[in-house]
Image (cartoon, rainbow, N blue to C red; front, side, top):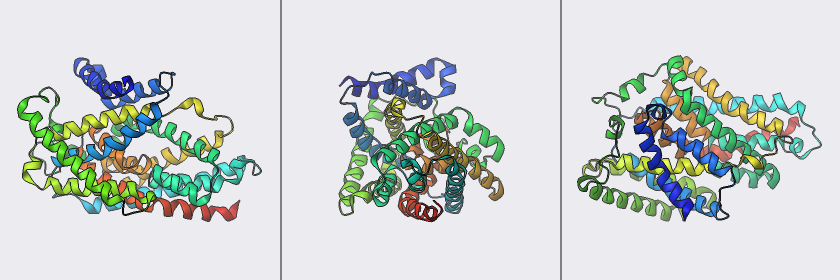
Length: 390
């Protein structure tokens, strides 16, 4: 119970501190919650029931948060061609870095060890998770019959490096890439008269000050009701599909229905719905950070696997940025696509809010969903392509 209260109330404390102290506001609530969550998860403060609590919260938070964040947005002028080009270049960057990393690190690994024997499958796991997400990694583990120990090692390293990757982007990476690539869309998104699908929350520096007033809170209850209904419908539809496909169906369902609901004027006009969804994302941030247990990592035995994952994550990001320069893509769309591929679709709203550019949410979610759809194929194909060169 105490852990649940910490998860729910800590974002409010952090938001208050950010409004009170400018130095903390520059870091932003999400980065601070990541740091707090990592401290909680790695200092022996977690109770034995933590894993169950975390699983429940991770299951409920995102499917409700995404519709809430979509309700107040206007998606009529979404640039689909730019998103598709960003998706193609992003997947290309991931595949190239994974294949290159395989040949870079393979000579340093003893082929008689489990890691050596499974190295092509490790590449397959990475291809699946970095074009799709954890569900794809789990599915590929079953398809390739990867030993539990190898799977746990790769997944643990992935969580650690993905966490560092997010901190890099949240701290200075986004601004750096905006300077390098240029960000026409990001500039437009800050203008009140922009035609991009931005929400009122983006223009409000203190979105939670009048959150619980009668004029805002009562309509918000209706927004929550619609979001929960969307989640329930999507969950029911997912039961018609196999277990491995259910998460894709749920996210696709809540995204599609959330977009559809945004075209209904009474729903789109509900104030603070985006802020409510964003608060759930803040909770998600501290929960997911507390799940990264660095004490369980075998830093000696899997050293080259760790380096491989670092190259795959950061190499794909920088290659994607290079391709963005060539194809004249804007920085924010590229960064959100990288987050959608590396961290999966649920992280898109969090990063979009941190970038203060909600116009990229739909592009990011779409890219993440396509990634879920192709992740299993990519992982299986990459693992088998690399198998003959063992």
